[in-house]
Image 1 (cartoon, rainbow, N blue to C red):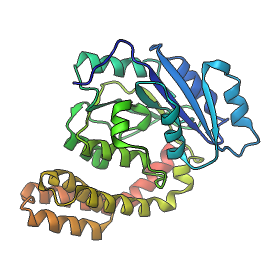
Image 2 (tube, rainbow, N blue to C red):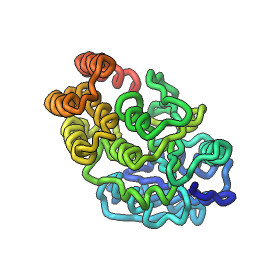
Image 3 (cartoon, rainbow, N blue to C red):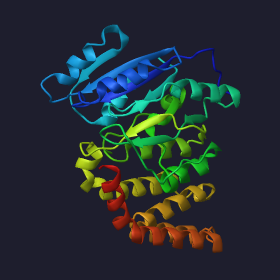
Image 4 (tube, rainbow, N blue to C red):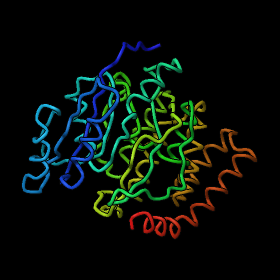
Length: 314
């Protein structure tokens, strides 16, 4: 079992791009943590805002560590932060999101209280959604609580609710074993990484309380570049078909990927995976029922998804 020394250092990494509107509130929420052994790293990802992001970050002096890099996207900024972090644990905070004061402490306590293996467990919490004004908005999706096996974690992030990146704590040793975030993903850089950790036999432990405020607004990169999402999903499915390979012991992971393909209307991928699973003798009545469920969800998701996004971003 991975050792845990008393009060490990937690590195809170804030990737920032044209972030002046919300960045101060994000930094303040990090500084307000009840857990006091933290470092706060702001990585300015080449902001094009006449120096506003930089001036705001520098106004915090030695309360934070500030770095500037050329623009290359969120994954690149996170990877830069990982390279310079001094902590035992990685904690991501988007520049437009907020931590509740107990976020870090609650997750560290969960590790100790539940005697979890820090080398094989990702700590997680759910989030509440807020809009541009900071008002809470409804979210119909709830994270499963408690300890999730690697197989359950893989399915969770594909089919139920993707783990909120800002709600996680990840051991530096887990990151060293699994490598960096992939810069070629703009929408799915988080989901891909959580899938990668699950395939590495990491479990996820989700505490009961939502401890992050996740802001949704029209200026987010994922909104402005929404047209590339479908192609990214196709690339993700193809990549994980290859990663899982022909290992029959991983068929449960492959089945979740198959359901995701049907849910997201990637029917050619779904049919291909289904054919492989059927030849392995994996598909029974229960699995077929699950697939039909996600086919139905896929057929209705476009209209409902657009309506939901309009409502929450009002």
